[in-house]
Length: 298
Length: 298
Image: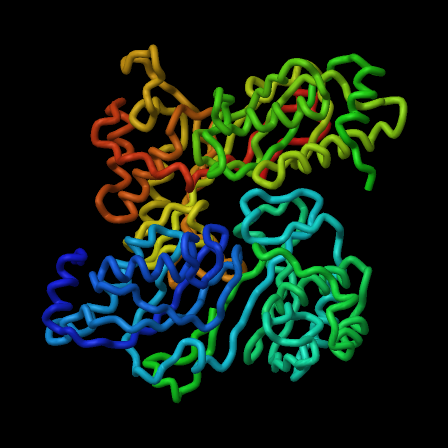
């Protein structure tokens, strides 16, 4: 396997000197980061990615990383999509196809395991990870059982009470469609609560994951909530997950979701579920994005 | 749910004043600890357990925790077994069966997720977590694939080269039976390499875990090595796992395992696999241990 080091990239950069847009699919363990967005003095996903790319390209300025869906502190991703403009480190005149894989391997070596680059492709400059995205899909995991599982402590919210999964699944259907989601969103700074926050949810489901092969849950169950929408507002998935857990516990019901959506107010809504159960699992793009591959999904 | 605090336990302790032996099944995420055994100034599983128990019982001395299989730094467990003698904090005159569950819940609240008590049972003083154990079972997980998975970074060893799982499975059979395992053990301090280290392996297998429901492995596979023996010597499972990965990569074969066992020397053996892929998954006891339940297994 050829080893690319910073010095070899640097030489090629000097040869090429042209900027190109890259799309990358990225996975990360949110536990390790203060969210996606770069923040001074904080360990963030964008910050680590930018640092690793800057070490490889040896450019003077840190590259700007644009993502499909900003994730909060503690939130994971298995298929975040980003774009970044790099002064082309790849000599296209030799082994055209080998380059992207080497950039990916070089990045993965730098990132050391808590962030992982699944693919890296040169794309048209019109592609925008955020604005070209047609949908995002999130998963929220709940471990239901008397005994917490240390091996899943970072990946699922442990709820010790038994839950009615069928009631949760039925109630989840109430968010499908185009609704004003103010009741399940944190208000954006500088906006008033009078402004509607309309989002189109195209999928919502609750089921029990078959973990028989991969995890011993000490008699418990792993409950999975998945939701897909054109876009989300801040804390939307965690707020709906929190409401669904209240429904599973029998303290709320599907009609409450309908009433909350009509109320256009957070009053009476459940607390948002904790961030560590949440994972961004897919982002979809249309053909106009000029992607060499079809939509990305988990 | 009744909440037991240190003060209520303390009152009962004063009422009872009798010592009883407890057996507990314990799970933990090894990443967080410098191994099982208590070490001054280090965060260890036994140290955390002893501290939590001392806070609950309010005894002056820290209780001694004896385990079935000491695990190294980074090694996980889903079914470690311990025994500990506690001045009985449970008033047996009322709700005899409720007490152990409350001790368990109280401990789990104190331990905060990285260690979990799966069960806690009062047992005969003849029961000894270490000496009564008839077998131990370990699992070693290997993630084979081009892309590391951040969500499994702490639980599986990532190997980027493709592996021949059938060759690994066949070779694993060579360790079954009673052998001198010096070639796969770290020498115990104060012993010479001339002393045989005989262990009886009753099960060894390699297979691919079906993760389709629970993990997206980005095209990779999760390979599971499981081994059960009367007892293990230090680094035995990790050394065999390291050898099996060399076999999977085509750099060694089953005959090498037979030759290594005959050689009674570590020379030529593979490097031990890293600790974070290893997990203690079960311990078995016979009926003479006076256990209220049958053998413990994952």
